[in-house]
Length: 361
Image 1 (cartoon, rainbow, N blue to C red):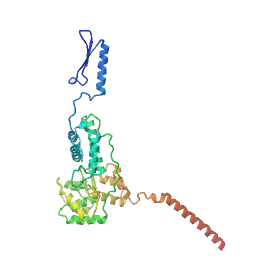
Image 2 (image 1 turned 90 degrees about the vertical axis):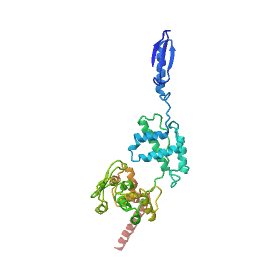
Image 3 (image 1 turned 45 degrees about the vertical axis):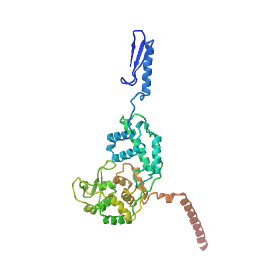
Image 4 (image 1 turned 90 degrees about the horizontal axis):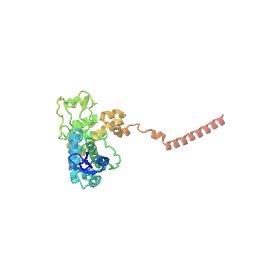
């Protein structure tokens, strides 16, 4: 931006609001003050509307997903999962330009996911509200992260989209009898490592993937150390001597077991155990936590065993404690009313008993 005096005696303001490569604005004025005022006016306008005159962002939302994954998502434990979910959603929405992606477009996609018109697999048709809530969270987090990295300057297009309210679901867990029945079916499976993986999950509360990917170096007398966990923190969980003796004795960094999740699903079915949708992979973890609390375990100790970073997640198991909310029995108003009546009856009986004793003297 510059103000200069012309040979004619007038003053010229030459302004490049968006830089030397952008549009040029020139005006002539009778006085230098007017030229300077015009220059300031154009400059203020450019600052108030920085997006005017900028090159059009021709990237598609799918390109933003790739940029987010390379810059940040690759460090997340579920980064690949998020990337896959968002890429699927982008294609289902017609692979929109990032500048055209908005709440209405996502809302329409969300409705179609819930109705089963858009599916990712033949096994699951209509998804639950929780699934689309996760997809919404993935996209919102992506735009927020790209804004922090200065790779996206416009507002977050999903900033004002609200999640669906969902009822808290009861976590499925196995009784001792069901767990024993499951182990019997695992023993019959052709998958040689199935029984051991199930035993590790039941004994430590490990996630299926944590147990399935164990290496020999993670096992030592009296404990198993889980690494590369969802919470990004290693955790060591004590194990019995009996379980330790059953585990393979190898000090290599290679996985001890062969993947057998499908065999686990089959064993659950053969054992006659029915589970809510989506709870197969965590049912053993829930079983450990439930029995831990029913046995009088400490909720803070359970948090450390399971590796939860937020105690609120662990509190889902608090109601299994034998003394959980037992005060409700003694301190509810119905019990107080009943207690008052019983006290009154006892007082009346004591009164007549005293009168009777006096008459008998």
